Amino acid sequence: MVRKPAVAGYFYPGTRMELETELGKMIPRQTEKREKVIGLVSPHAGYIYSGACAGKGFGRIALGGTVILLGINHRGMGHPLAVDGHDEWETPLGRIRLNAELRSELLGRSRLFTVDSEAHLAEHSLEVQVPFIQYLKPDTMLLPVIVSSHRLSELLEGGREIGRLFAGRSDLMMVASTDMSHYIPADEARELDFQAIGEILRLDPEGLYKTVSRLGISMCGVAPTVVMLAAALEAGATRAELVDYTHSGEVSGNLKEVVGYASIIVR
Image (cartoon, rainbow, N blue to C red; front, side):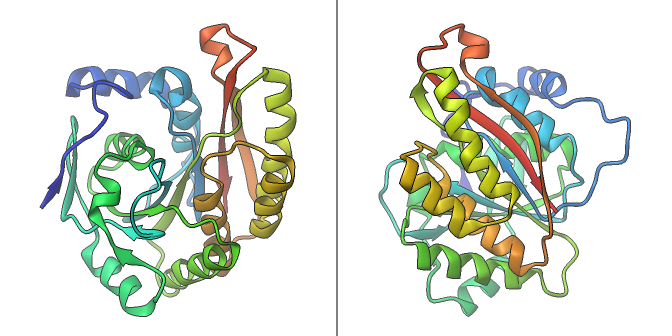
């Protein structure tokens, strides 16, 4: 069973040649050895706006054998913690396998996660991350999870359950897919976004959740980022690094209504 691309030719180029060319431009040429990490926060807008920011993050890391993708459910329909049940995902770069064994292990251990492939079918937040992974390491497998829950206790426990999958494994990493503030002036977006980024850099999932809620930060993927941080702490993470921050106004020229983007490494 193959999940077909939903936003190829819209959020990113729709042909292999165009997509490979674009990825080659967005991912910096690495002069130093790429580093093994536990997690990466990566944006998910159209590549014209956030692709370079995402590319800087992916360009720094050594991908593992399996990437656990954590994204936001923009439509809000489906299970609160929806694991995709397909065998493969397809993009213009070809097909990439899902790790069925790891999926079964997570589902066998957890009462929170459920297979819900329909929640993934039209969602772009994870799909736009996949070509970066295929371009850098085509044999990597995926475990895609869409998060629509906003209950802090559920997000933290779900994260800890994912973090326990890392025990005895050295080939796992996570990508949390999120954009930052939406459609506000660039200066305001930067000020608010760095409040949220500060909590991520402190590896504080509860602090991130509460800061975003208290300040009304329109960070769409706060929930999957909370899950990732809780999982990273369970897996032994000790520090994080901001790789890049930018916003859509850098491309559009419109500084009155921007969307913010950040790439952050969690080690």
